[in-house]
Length: 194
Image (cartoon, rainbow, N blue to C red):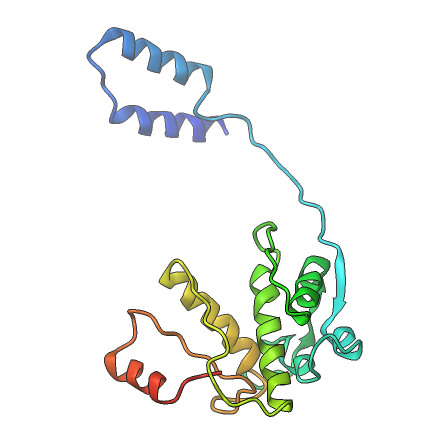
């Protein structure tokens, strides 16, 4: 730790050379007191409460039966995967969506917020087909950055393409950002996804 602190101090001090002695003294005091490098802090987050597996939620009628095949941890396109275990806050979101109510979910990083809205969207599309709904764009997901849109597209591929194959997805999706070429945009508009 001491070596790392010394290297960081040397680095940060290399580009600061105040002429005013009061400022230089203040900076020296802050550096000497260790204000820039506090002691390490370790925090453990408690586990999220379990809400059940996708198989259980399908058996309970909360999710369409095809969700059991879709929402599995899969490694490649041929992998059938293992059923996902959802957190209780995700299942609460699924229940709210199933009743048609709006909901807001706030929870920590890596807690599955994306699945809390993706699963209900997929479920609604699958149920709509059973009810004879006309094919249409059912959801538009807006992300603040292209990087997030790209990573979420990869996640959707794992669920909706893996285990089915390209062109055989049970629910279709497309990314529509400034990254797409004009021909790709026209193709999306001509043949919209679910």
